[in-house]
Amino acid sequence: MALHLKRELGLFEATMYGVGIIIGAGIYALIGPAAGLTGNALWMAFVIGAAVSIFTGLSYAELSSMFPKEAAEYIYIKKAYRQEYFAFLLGWLIIFTGVVSIATVALGFAGYFNSLFNLGDNWISILVGGALIAILSFVNFSGIKETSNFNIIFTSITILGLLIVIALGVGKFGTVNYFQPSMGYSGIFTAAALIFFAYIGFEDIVNVSEETKKPRKIIPRALLFAVIISTVLYALTSISAVSLASPEALSQSSAPLALAVSNSFLGQNAQLLLDIIALFATAGTVLGILVVTSRMVYGMAEQKSVPKILSRLHKRNQTPHVAILLISIAAISFLFFGSIREVAEITSLGALSTFTAVNLALIWLRFTKPNLKRAFRTPLNIGKYPVIAFLGVFSNLFMIFQFRWPIISTTLIILAIGTAIYILHRKGYIGEAVERTTGINIEQT
Image (cartoon, rainbow, N blue to C red; front, side, top):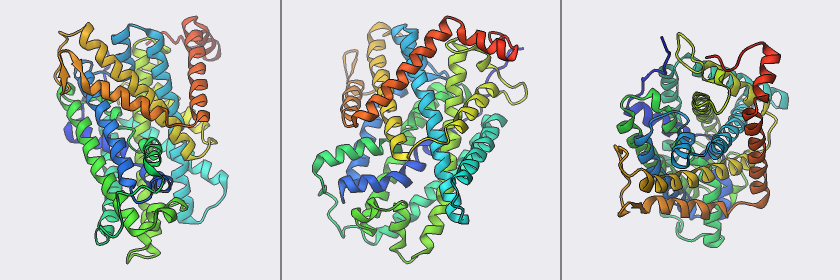
């Protein structure tokens, strides 16, 4: 009997899955650099990031109601343009940035872990980060229901941390001018491009469609709920942070939220509290990205865009164990990567490129497949033309031009590597190499 992924997730679980990926390491690490660019108008950068996310989120919602499958972006591009190469490149970019992000956030976890236990050795950080990836990969392997339960716990604690920051800052709301950017509106747009990393994850909900009950209805709702919840928390947290501490002080701190909270009655205890909560935030982010990246590999293997062996499901757990193993090994090998800001920028640029392609795919499908069943349809249309998708394309391209050239060139190199892998796979060289090394026929299921 053929194995299939288990449909275990309801609206609450899917929404919490999205919130869990969105609200994680990004807000704890990037609010400082963003404050340095915006001053007290920090909240504006988060609102701009939210607007860009919502435009694209609505496009994802409609596409997910049409094609509720894993490896969602790959499927959307392939269905729209019937172009295997472009679909592969998009999937490759998502997988690569996912793997690097897992490694970097795992090192962030190790940093908080080392701070709590006064461990300073870089090798300790690598060992702790590797152990975290291995443990959470096992959770991912155990089953989507078990993974969802862990995610709900991690997400709840992470949200609690932001609620603490908000609660401690409420008393000082209104003490500064929140509408005066320190570097003008150009600084706000630059900050919005940077902190967009803190929103990435809303789109990942579509990649658990095959593990969700009634995905055509639940996935679009969960996606929008996740973005709205995250936006409210982010905006209130940023207002609290600049109310408790100056933007200059936040920008110079390695733990900006802990610094802000330390100016309340908690004092120096704030560092300990925020370090503990940040452990759950970073662990939750790692778990979420592990899930979505392994499902992207699984879905592409189902489409035979990568070796078929990667679509194998474990007989008992019904999880893509080969894809999970590959992603965990790759992520551990990237534990020597650079700073979170660099990774955040590369990941954000990759995501914005993906979102541009997804919005264009929706516009194209409105005209080429107008009669295809859509359980959800984006609002604001001129005839068949989706205005929201156009705003998504425009806003994503605008954000892309805010990045530094080294980040853009790095992304182009990543795409060039993906092109080489695509050619080698199409010619059968990758399959031959694996078969010679392992003796396994990779085209067998």
